[in-house]
Length: 269
Image 1: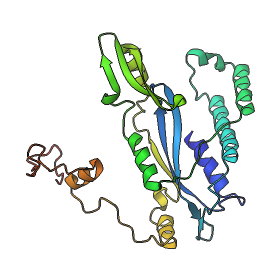
Image 2: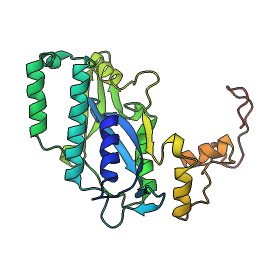
Image 3: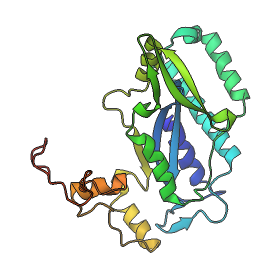
Image 4: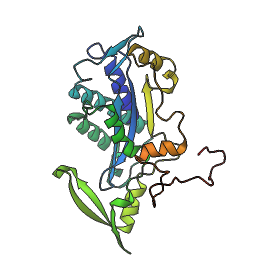
């Protein structure tokens, strides 16, 4: 999925019909839905412009990025191309109802069916600004599949969780699962050790941060850049993240808490 997304954005962005420049973007994998079923999909945030071959900044302009239908067709081709490649290299595993696709004839029929369908990619401009997008994605980047507050009740046999029915105007409902089924769904979303969940590409890639990204900031009059947390203490950073002063005494609301010890040697309070 990462390859298909990256190649789709790279090729279309550098096409003469569209941006005609190297883009910058990062992609985040999200694997679960509200009911904890396996629902892998990629969220991608793309810069509103790119760097041309002559190292000039080109804005995306009034026309927002790339037409959705064009994105969908390109992504479909890329995704199915890599799927076929992994199949030929025996890199795919088949379980349950999918075991039938180990048969080459049935797998080809599946591919034909996928090519016939109209795929859809969801893309839109961040009307509330880029910070709203980052805040939304920030909820998922380092969290687990379900938080404690969504667990309504637990007994010896079942677990009841709160869900939003997005197909029905985000109506709040509850779903009751057996304990075994709850654990099974939860474990599906634990990523392999060393898996890189957030990946940066193009101008935002690590190898380009000190060269191309710096030039983009200069060309867009944003060369004076300071990280939000630079120079702050750990307590000050946490206060910004949670939206309240964590050093304020929760009892009297006047005194200040002081750090007496730390679990990590050398950590600055």
